[in-house]
Length: 200
Image (tube, rainbow, N blue to C red; front, top):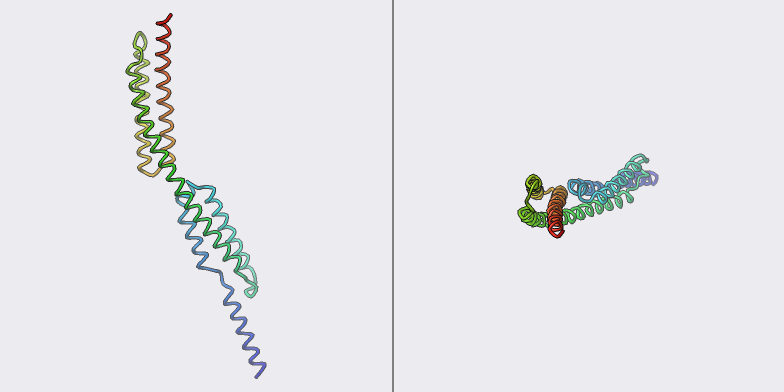
């Protein structure tokens, strides 16, 4: 009877050990969900943080695989649970950084667009007051065409903001500023040249 009881206890202990040696599925699912939730924006707006989150998930998967390859009684999932928590934290951090960066770019795009609008107005006034004379009409027409192209690009920047494509909006708005500045510089140089000729 005693041996029978010992055998039952041994079987119970084995069953208990096998039952306890299970992957922390809830934590694993949470880490995977956090990573997928962060993917859409973090991959674009916080690539380094998202890469770190992917690395954390890879570490978790490596550990899980290592435990699965062990004999059932030898499996231990304490490290897996810790790695799952780390992967979740990394994914959440990436998501938070992406949100902050997206907001920063949105504000930057709006500021640049506002500045570009002002610059286009100023450049248009300069072109209208540009020195007119022999051979200048073609140059003025070219400058006006450049301003028209800048206005078109600015409209594209505004559309990019509306679509949530803030990186594109910033790039387009910066390009507009450069184009408008070139127009301003050309007119100012023409005015300076004409003024210099008058003084001679």
